[in-house]
Length: 202
Image (cartoon, rainbow, N blue to C red; front, side):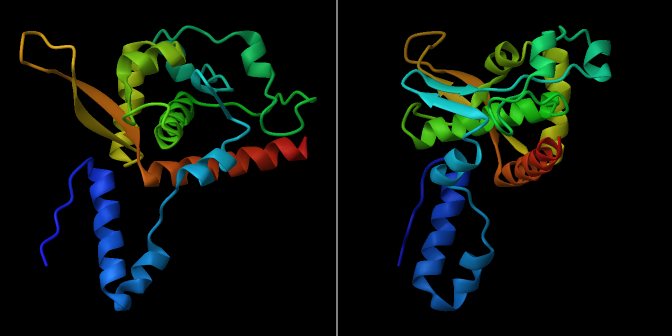
């Protein structure tokens, strides 16, 4: 038997594991320990943090202005963004204790990208650093540092995509996009659960 898988790395890995699990019943244990988050799970888990509409997806929280970001000249968030958080509990109440770091905020946008891909809103998963910068209102130096930390922790992976906007005829100009990994989603899930417990105790 000769089988060939093509596509993004994450997709090829999943297809390969699915193939072995189906072909070899004794590898059924791999299915039990293989961690994966499909779009339905993500939509339900992040329903209070990410909004989906016909125009795309939107993250409903704002990042906290930390001392590190201040030193890196990150523009401060609005006061209302730091004091009001209606997504972790009853929407009629304000949550003053729930705050989001830049890394968590980046991860939320990357999860939103994965949901958008799963729903067919966008063709390819991933966000360019310029789009992350626009969404977070943080400077490129701060974002580069946070993304580097997240890649070292294997929360985020970096891919090279080719855009149809070419520098010359018959050529494609590559661009770098960032995607959240399964490990990154697991990390963010734990953070959300902890923040949810804090919010419910208020």
